[in-house]
Image (tube, rainbow, N blue to C red; front, side):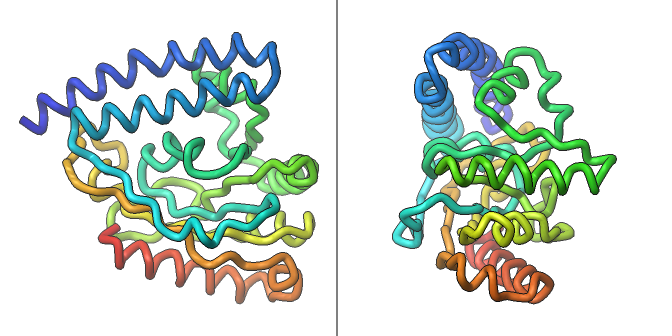
Length: 238
């Protein structure tokens, strides 16, 4: 039954994704808000399929920690799920991701159209400079920035190598950091075809103010962020 339900879900997902991507591209001509409408609808449609085909429910905790101003979201990265639902979790934002994703027909083009920051992983210095320059500009335009500090998805129960890029950006832009933990891999594993029924909980941790970020030692703050995110991820079963 799991195989059948997962197969149906994946077929539907890979059918609707290029369709919604095309709508994002078309409506981008009328401005970012119009394009984001379709991006959010894609997220909600995928969540609907996940719930009613695979039995995956979403619970959100910690929204009281949301700041009133734009910030850097540093999130745990375990599966595609958290990237898919991000448009319905937080205000209009910009991803920082590998530039190769832009080459995916329709979907990658839609990512480029909504001003995603695509970096070259093979050139760390250029990537850091680009993130700081473009990210600071977008934060000043009230856009939130989403960074996965591990850089790539980690397996259930594992931790990747946390990198300080999100902290560097927050310090240079003079904004705070909102940490995010979740247990997505418990239902939607890394590169997993099979989707398991259950509840995925996304937990936003206490907001770290711009003043605290600015006055903190980067290494110490990164260690604290990693410890807190991983602790809450394990508490959720991730």
